[in-house]
Image (cartoon, rainbow, N blue to C red; front, side, top):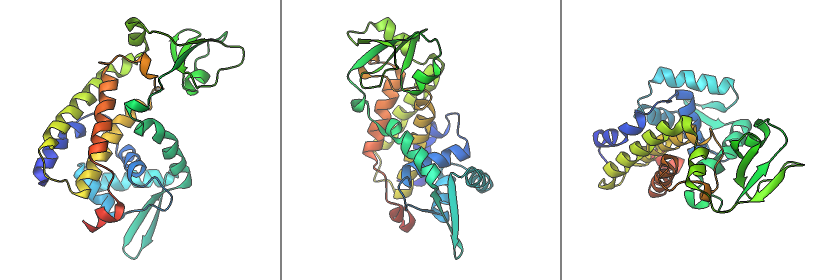
Amino acid sequence: MPIDDFDLAIAPLKDLGGQRVWSLMISLFGDLARQEGQIIGGPVLSAIMSAMDVRPEAARVALHRLRKDKWIASEKHGRISHHSLTPEGRAQSQAASGRIYATPDDLPEHWQMVVTDDAETGPLEKAGFTTLMPRLYVGDAALPVPKDAATLPGQAVPDWMKRQLEPASLAESYAQLSDALHHVARDLAGADTLTPLQIATLRCLIVHNWRRLALKHPALPRPLIRDDWAGLVAHQRVAALLEAYPRPDLPEIATA
């Protein structure tokens, strides 16, 4: 696809907020080089960052920060730098990948309600539950239940309850992401084959914008989600685009 047309097509994703360069790099490495032994060469990294309108000096600062934070390791072979996730960075990327890459069809079909005698929400939310009201939580039926908690199997869910479970603080961001993904899918639909570099860039922007919202709250079982909730619509569009544009191999990007 011509560069100018591609830039216009992905502009809605680049225009969304929260595009910190170091975070974009985490999304990029998590998508392209999450497995042990996978390396992104300096020229490839520079080309993808440039395609996302990241200035070279900003990319260098982000790399320095991620090396300092032990997310990324860099080695120089001749004049070319090679970058990879550290074991710590790879472990964190792997831990988040299930949430990021699960499709809506992967969402649990069964749920449970848990009542506790402790008003502290942190431990249960960290375990994957969502707070419905003080001391009352819902989540995947397969999640382990705290000792001394009362549980009820999930049944039919009224619409008011689904709305209450939606993260209100993210409503506008999910709507913006859903709208951006719609425009990107529409504008790419009639395009010729994208280059490996274009696909890597597209996937990074999709994964990044999805990751920064999805990881802020636990995944709800499917029966607890309204069909027209912007978060679900965005999820469906993320899954469709990632399936339509499979992850390119790193040597393929480098060769192109």
